[in-house]
Image (cartoon, rainbow, N blue to C red; front, side):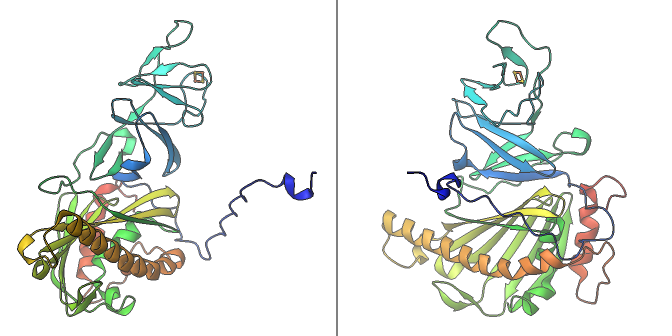
Length: 349
Ligand code: FES
Ligand SMILES: [Fe+2]
């Protein structure tokens, strides 16, 4: 028997996002900065899979060949414009368009079609990087190639064991600015911290160092901690939280990616590493240690998510101030504003 409800889709459509309560600024949205931006976790793109992700104002189609190589391309087939992420398939080393089955290979060129006719043009691959379990795509103004690398962690590759993501009505510049805005850590997040040195810039990298007065670390109780955050462009931050008393260090990634004007998805992930096995509490058994590091990573991620949830309403409703009236103590924000200019075309921010 058919009822009226049978005509409803199985999944309710996502409600339209309400408009921003106030404009983010008087001028146009900040442009997309140049740099590396995370589009997915490695585990979201298995061999032979195709994945579409929004990046700035356009879709990017990611795919992984049968041999495991990751590629990223602009979405539209050069033949007649089909979206390669909607029905496109990976066949061996190629991405095959669903419409007329032209296939595109490693350099983006057309390598086959069912009739034996090749297109003279190909798809435009974007620079892509897979590191520590994340997939990054490079954005360069006027398609300029990558001018710098994301920093690598020393030693064997560390992969995060805990993830979380949130969308917010802001721009990655405003998200990353939080790292240098020490004043808000006490007022908004109620964290008692001391800035060790002002933010230090080195080309596309910027570093800050903090020490807590006495923070509460989940699982460990109350203790003071030191953390340094390294920023690489406006899409990548890595915070290292040292816990020498317990022989551990936590790595915390904050990866904001623009998905529209004043719209950003912020991915956060955590991994815990044993740095001094002698100091780690509990028996030295691999399964116990793995469970312990996962627990520490998950707890740190939860604590971080709680802090970021306090930032989100501020980001969603604040106005972008191109020339903020900085006060004494905001020195690192000033250094940051100067540093970010390199990621935009001249005069853009
Ligand atoms: S539109 Fe892609 S093969 Fe024709
Ligand atoms: Fe914050």
